[in-house]
Amino acid sequence: MEPDQTERLILLRTFKERFRLVVLGGGFAAFMFFIVTLMFQWHPVGFAELAVHFLADDVFITFGLFSVLACLWGLFTPRWIESFLDRSFRRVLGVITVIAVASALSVLLIVWGL
Image (cartoon, rainbow, N blue to C red):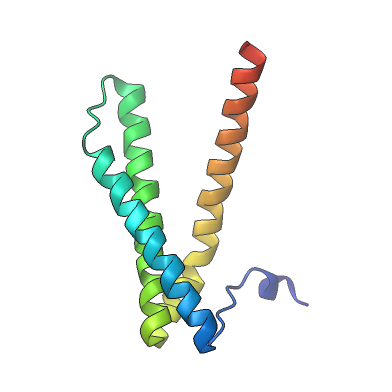
């Protein structure tokens, strides 16, 4: 298998898999919408909180839009969404990696500080 093929998004076209994607994507999009509405209630004070607020808004909106597009692809399977999801898959994996590393570092700092 070529290295380029391992980093590609594999989209299954069976009805069962598309239905699962619609349900999962719809639920995830609703959750992200809920989180973003809660984020609008947070009024950051100081530069650090403002930076965290900006990054959190960006991440939640990105995941929400990605899940809405996945849900639309599951319903209608248009080619333009498929090519967009294929291109943006690496970026979403990068965001997940950054969040995972930041979470692990936060846990280590909390445990080390206790």
